[in-house]
Amino acid sequence: MNQILKCAGTLLVMLCCTSALLAAEPVPAPPPAAGKSFTSSWGERLKQGGPAALVQIALSIFGAGFVFERFVHLRRKNLAPVGLADKARKLWRDGKFDELEKLGETDPSTLSHIISFIAKNRQSPMVEVSAVCGDMASRDIANHNQRAYPLGIIATIEPLLGLLGMILGMITTFETVAFAGSLGDASQLAGGISEALVTTGLGLAVAIPFLALYHFFKHRTAGFGVMLEEDVTNLLSEWLMAKQPK
Image (cartoon, rainbow, N blue to C red; front, top):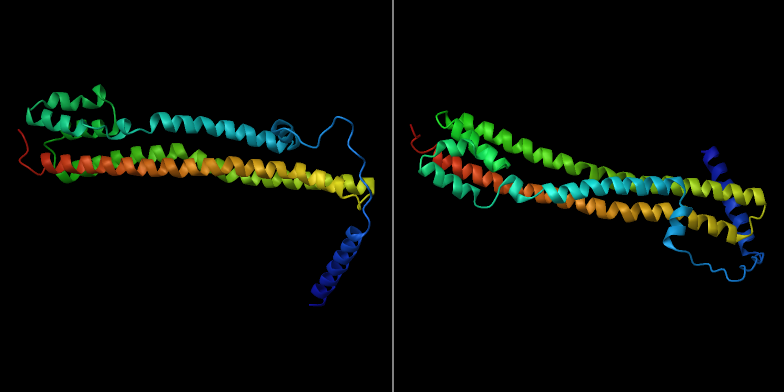
């Protein structure tokens, strides 16, 4: 308890000294050079971020590839195409089981592969066929979710890299101020803090859209999974719960 009180007293004294120092008349900062402005472009600000900002930019470019891949491959036609179930019903009624068995090759999708499996095993018990169909659908859905997982990782790492860059920048700033011996010059401290905050802002700017896209793709995959499950359940009940064809 005594140690805690001593530490608290020491911190109080340091805060009082710091407040008094900041309240003192500030040392006038040197005027900016002629023709020079305090404003800077985003390119210059990113350069101020240092190595941490470079890693963040590289990570965002890497993640952009996964975003593009998801927009290309996560479509309904790859899971449960519109009209495929009706087409399969017509082929089943017409007794064209050979075409049904090859449907996974002629019109590749998760639903078409399941329909081909049902056609090949139409004489098997419905319980066994249904279990295998469920496994096939779950495996493809899990595969699509796994491909979107890197977006969630990037959304988690980016703010941490921003925080790391800020801490490293603050350490460098305080070392510069301590070396200069001018703790009363707020301009040196403010400029360094501004540079250190670049990585924090960059991390949040990258993490927010990546997190939103990650949940968007998960929601979209879940929606397609519901459509796929509905089509498979209806086909199984219509085909295998009725009298099985010979």
